[in-house]
Each structure stands twice: as structure tokens, then as C-alpha cells.
Length: 44
Image 1 (cartoon, rainbow, N blue to C red):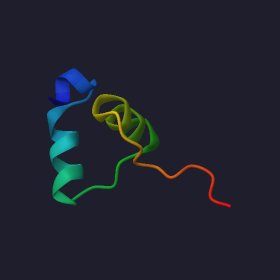
Image 2: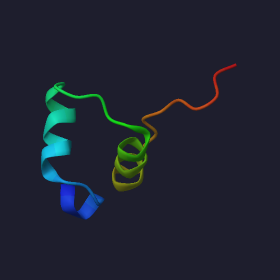
Image 3: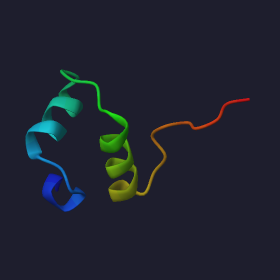
Image 4: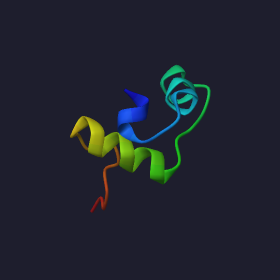
């Protein structure tokens, strides 16, 4: 799954386990792969 999302499996493992905070590139890749919004964007 990580390879299909365009990232290293260790990055995904660390993010999902809570041992690392994802950077914006990782968030964008996960959003694209899962088809969901993970970052709220502009909040008014």
C-alpha cells in the first residue's frame, strides 16, 4: 500500500503508529491515495 501511495513503508508505519508527524507531502500523498481530506485547509 505504501509503495502504491508513493512513499516508503517505514514512513507510513511511523505515521500510523504515532511515532512521527507527517510532513505536507506525506499528507498530500495519503489524501490522494485514500481519497479523503486529512488536512482541513482554510478554516474561517
